[in-house]
Length: 310
Image 1 (cartoon, rainbow, N blue to C red):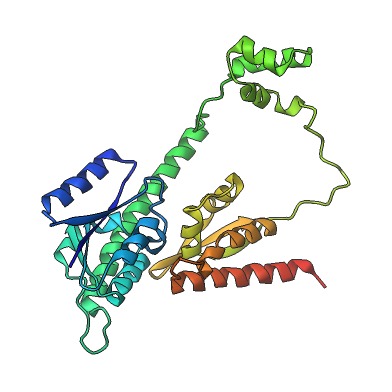
Image 2: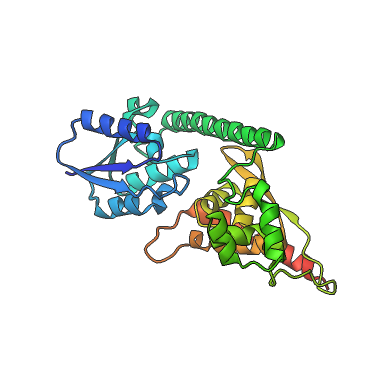
């Protein structure tokens, strides 16, 4: 019987160090370690993370999966229940060494039905909901802080290389015939920084054609939370990220719906990006995620039919 250790490196060095300390103090004999790449998003479903999938492929019935704390592996209630079902199916034991879940036997199931005992399921849902609430509150406070900073005129992100004080002189020099390369040398910045400062003066910057068709109007669609979680963990365009960030969360039982306002074309693009939820070669399908994607697909298709007209 093998001891399989799953570790997820965090950008928070203190958190990662605590994880290592807890696992070291556990005294696990002959551990086989699967360490997730630091670039893997914690929002990605555990069953779709490369190293955890590799662990499940490597595991054999009777093996024990060790993690330092439950939320190193999962985030929401649905994720926990999905993982427990897969571990039960593969006859793998789970050992959590720290946190509230460490005192619970998560493998206790009804001898006749094989389902999680109702008391275990209740405790799992309660503790997971508490952890999810804590993360949501932290995110809301972060957004509130960013909005307060913007209201005071403070913008997040990297400061522009060409400051507002220099921008007028740079633009005047560019209009006077000085090249972008010469301006970059004179101001000790990159050519890209100069291009940003004079973007609206560049030859390729053209006025919008008055005869062009009007852009699509944004429409509101309800996106299942499982779809939103998957998309946020992926590589999206800035406009797509903005649409999700500005969405309104509506709680529904243990899950949620994200009300996203975007152009129909943006909804179609977001739908295309979550195609992997229907299953791809080598990726296990999570039925709840596949169902959520198809719900979103039905809504996008209905929108497309409505906008197509007679």
